[in-house]
Amino acid sequence: MNLKVGLFILSSAMLPVLNLMKDANPVEKDLPIQGTWQLVSGETIAKGKSTFTDYKKGMKQIKMFNGTHFAFFNHDLKHGKDPKPVFVAGGGTYTLKGNKYTEHLEYFISRDWEDKTFEFTLSMKGDTLIQRGFEKDEKLGVDHEIIEKYVRLKN
Image 1 (cartoon, rainbow, N blue to C red):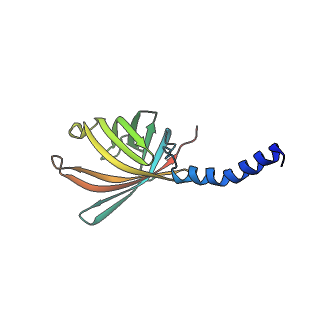
Image 2 (cartoon, rainbow, N blue to C red; image 1 turned 90 degrees about the horizontal axis):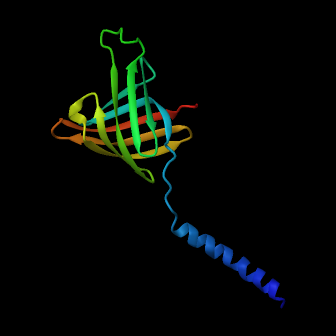
């Protein structure tokens, strides 16, 4: 048998084995969240009661991610002329390992929330980012699950 033919047969036989080994221990990649996202809906679940908010009606919120930090801004669409004007802002650092997302809130309009850390699970469906997890802090009297859906904003 020709040496080249033997090497070809051996390498052809090894390809399926190498592919199997590659799939047996996949490296979990971080979700591609960097950029700007618009919050379209949110659900809060507390004590078995669910509250749904459509963020496309009367307000707008964006959330931005770079490699280490996040920031969000929410305001009413009546330029503060509503009887109950809305402006909310916050931000801080985050870590992302695969789909495990941890926020450390450093800045927030409600200062009691600052220096809190919250863990979430992220998933993506097309251009939609879904953030799901629990916000719990006895001191604040907060104990609920949140499910937020964001769509990626184009440049």
